Length: 167
Image 1 (cartoon, rainbow, N blue to C red):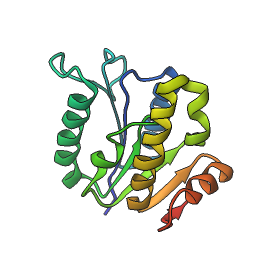
Image 2 (image 1 turned 45 degrees about the vertical axis):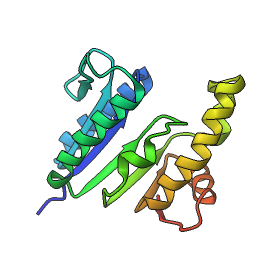
Image 3 (image 1 turned 90 degrees about the vertical axis):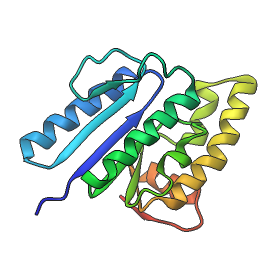
Image 4 (image 1 turned 180 degrees about the vertical axis):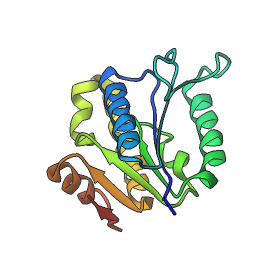
């Protein structure tokens, strides 16, 4: 029996590069006959079938993350593995995946090193502290860490004590 995989991303606004990567991933999975679904949640109007838009009544970051958590918990019985990509410095990243096993995190950058380039001043300092704490908790609970390069994977593994599998 095929294993079912869900790769999910959640952003306030879905970056074009992430959208393109997810579209290519979904197409590749279909061409290979994999039971692999891709879903993105954001405030953006859907432009592809895998994009989901938060309801207009769900406006704050906290309410969007709680909405996403409820949705994700409903999905977990339909999938054998969940892969998560979340924004750097997301204070809810750990809570989104709490109690969901097995799950994998995917990393495209060295998160802590990236923060000064995407957020400056006090916002960057807060994002750094959040990522350092919540990101480390998320990584320690993951069954595996996927890095798009070996360098990124090693970087993420250095952030946690209980080292999960890495790819």
